[in-house]
Each structure stands twice: as structure tokens, then as C-alpha cells.
Image (cartoon, one colour):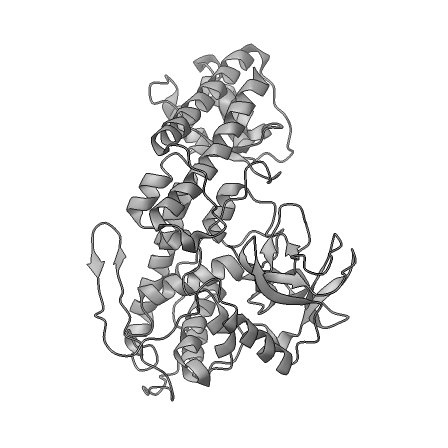
Length: 476
């Protein structure tokens, strides 16, 4: 389902820099307003909604084929041949249809534990320094100091618009036409299917960031250079596609100074919660590699890890939820907030300055959670301790220590348990309303869209409810 690769111990940027803060540098070049040769003008249907407005571009003649169907092997085989012709060394893996992920890399030969695989050379890796089919467009973005994320999103769209004229046409043709991303969920679907999950708010924030980033680029750059960035090509719909690709496939390579990159071929690898290996640049072989942490027999799918992420985080970026009980890194966010009826509400709010969400697992809680609970239940007589509690709850203490206030332990624990009960009730109501389903979510193409989204939400909420319930029982 999810075909992604990234550096899995580094968190990708949760939001994008506000581009309006980066003013055009002095001496900004006024590039000639001409259309780059061989670009195919796309007239695609655009429908972006933020509950208040709706914009559309009418459907007319030519359209750019943004990628392919997620389970297509024809485009993937063409990609494999192109990569080999372009310098990718012989591989012990091939792209095939698989049970987990629809397409994946499958072992052709015996693969030993500890063996290095891939060896994708830098010339076949897409970074912010990659050459543009329309050099003028790339130069404009760089002169405007556009950050790597929106720069790469624009680059993908630009190269896609050149079709066969682009060096990356075989790669782009093998990308999914519609990435499994919450960017494609409507606000109504987010409200309906993720009403009980904290991931809903993060999904809305991410969608808002993408829309804001596009609007800023359009206002500051695209509208000033319409021949380089025609709206028929660079619009909200195509940016939704390109950002969906980046969220699910961009990697950060530690050994290349943390550079973010798209790595063709490597991003056909699917995720397994049972492995810990991730991609990096290997200076000795001068290629992007990963080292296996288990052996594979011919015909077995080879996996990497997308990181130690909760089921909600995997859904947010990659559009899938691991099967129940298979993700040891799963956790649930427990939202806590001050009560306005508290006699010391203003003082506590001033000390804390915001509400908090804490990740909890069945095995225990973070120290910050108890510190926050102490602050919530502390009486006026403990005003002198508010700052210390708030600092511990926000992890701002110079030395991380487990603060103790035995006189309010019971009240703090009760507050946490009450919060667990509140969260459980939300998940329970959703699951009761959803009913039970036994559907195979590894083949979403065969499912009705609403049923598929509903099943993802049920899987997420089932795991979350069990962890919150288990945590509550563990503490009592």
C-alpha cells in the first residue's frame, strides 16, 4: 500500500516555512518571460475546498498523466530498465506485486543478514540541486530562497509537465497517480472518520500548510512569471499530488549532511514494523544503500522501516495502518487541558501557555504527563511550584527529573484516568457507530472509497482504544 523511503530516525518537517518571510534578494534577476520548450500544458480539474471558498479550472484538452495506478507493474518495469541503463548496478531484487503494499521489491537471490543493497548513485537521486528541464524556472525559485520542500514539490510538477522531454519521465510515470495521503481526504471525511483521533487535527494542519505554501508561491512567484509557471500546470491539485509524493517518499540522508532527497527504486521498498534498517548514503560505494537486518529467501519481499512511528503517524504520511498488534512503536496521544473553573486557571495557564498532548504506550507514560497532571490538580497553596511543574510538563527543565508531590499524587492519577475514560468513550462511540467489518485493506483499489477510509479509521481507533484502556487498567 505505502511505497516510501526516508531517513527513519529523523522527523520530517511538520510544517513548511512561511515563504513570505524570505524576501527576494537584492539584485533579483528579471528572467525572460518565455515558455520553456516542449512543456505540455495541462488543463486538469481542480477542486480545493477550505469550507469557505472553492476554485475550479475547467477541463479541456490535454492532460498530464501524473504517475500511474498504484499496482501498475508496466511503469515500474520501465523504470527498472531505465535505472539500469542509467547506471544502477545489477540488483538482487525486482519490482513485483506483493501482499503488503501492492508493489514492492522482492528478493531474486538469497540475501544475507547484514548485506548492503541498492547502491543508487547520486546521479539518480533527486535533490534541491537537480537540474531542471526549464532552468529559468529553477533559477527563479532559488533566487527567491524557496526552501527544499516546496522547491522539490514544484520541481516534480515541472518535470512531469515535460513528459518524455524530462530526464525523470520514467520515474514520474511509475509514481502513484494518487498517493495514499490524508491530503486527499476531504474535510467532511476527516471529521467523520477521524473524529475520535488526535491525528485529525494534525491532518488538518498539514493540509492547511500545503494550501498556504501553494498560495504563497502563487502570489509571490507564479503570478509574476506566468510563462514559467502557468496556472494550468502549477495549481492546487498538482501541488496536492507532489506533496503527497514527498510526504510518503522523501528521505533525509545523514551521511550527505542531512540532505533531503527522492531516491528512485529505493522508494519501492515497503514498511515492516519488524525491521529497523533505513536508507543512507554510503561513501565507500558512493551510493544510497541500506543494510539488511534479516535474511531473505528468493521470492520474499524485502522491507525497510519508515521509523518508530505510531499507527496514527503512519496513516498521516503514508496512508496505511499496520494490522492490529503488529506495531510495537504504536502509541496514543492523550490530550490534557486546564479547566477554566480552576481557581488558579490564569496563573497555571500563564505558566504553561498551552494545552498538551502526550504519547502513551501500554508499557508506561512520559514523565511530562505526570508533571502536567500535578499542575492541573495543584491547589492555590502550591502556586510557588506552578513554574516548576509547567517546565517539567513542557520538557523545558535543564535536567530531566521525575518530580514528585506525594500530597497530590492521588488527585493527579485520578485526573489522568478520567482523561483516559474520556478518550475511550470517543473511540467507543465511533466504533459502535461504524459496526464491525472484516475487510482486506491491503487492496484498497477493490474497495469502495468510503468503506476503505472507514476501515482505516476503525483500525486506528481499535488500536488506540485498546492502548488507552490497557494503560488505564495498568495504572489502576
